Image (cartoon, rainbow, N blue to C red; front, side, top):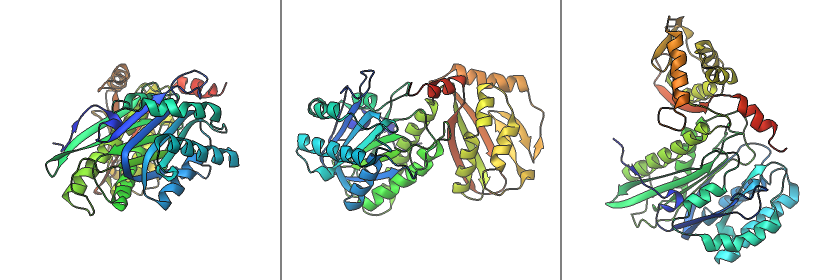
Length: 413
């Protein structure tokens, strides 16, 4: 039984937050493309970012801001242009974006964090952004999370948000989140863009550690296509407006808050994998028997990221050899004579030996999952046991379809 329950509201579910999303003309389509998340008071801030050597200006900007001061009050996100690999002018655009929003909100520029998504090599359309700031701020409301979630997407088919509530010291504490991501998903930190709000009071060093650990168990465990983005950003704000006692060290309250934060991130991460470009199913890989949890997560991610396996799942081909091969090349030592592989309820390999199984029924299992896309039964479950270790881990991915190639072959044309 969990210590939390789901509530509506996304990033505006926690107390003291407003959000907005508008169409500012950044996207040629005219779709919503500029989002704001705003805390009524200065909040503790933390971030996890791409480890790519090619980083968007927004990533460098946020990293510098958070290194100087672990607090923020607003997040500005534009969609349409990634503002990555745009040189000095791209950096200037990021700075100006933060300054414009700070002026409109009446706060210090260093309290604004920025994020971008879209085509790499394209600068933000600053003329449209400049004229969009005032209506964006005017639109901010306590019910604006849905609009913000719409304004940060690119190739996503659905918006992605979640909010959970628990109780600390007899008072409600909430965490909400929105994220985007569909392609270029193989995070080496978080994935694409994800924003989390919280109304607990917590020290900055604990909040950063919690966010980093949550990313390792969630966003770092999903893969769609093996490509890490230049813009991967996970930002978290905690503004203390729940009026609960400040959490300054690990203990029962900190554990409860981190567990809920991890759950929020895991739900968002799964929604990204489920919405993978061209995907028809959600692939969940569970690994046990590893030397430790980190090793188990490493193997799970290798399996979920196997292009050969993803193609087989799209073809509803129960080719368990691709699962075993991916586990073997994951870089984690294990005794192959103890390897066990299951697809759903179908045991295909045990004690390192192949087993007879109902191949047509296993194929039908994957077809049934595809028929339940975006419902609770759309998941193809792969279970792997490496042996006698205590480590467990989960990763999520999706199948690799013809539509993935089509979407990315025409991305800028």
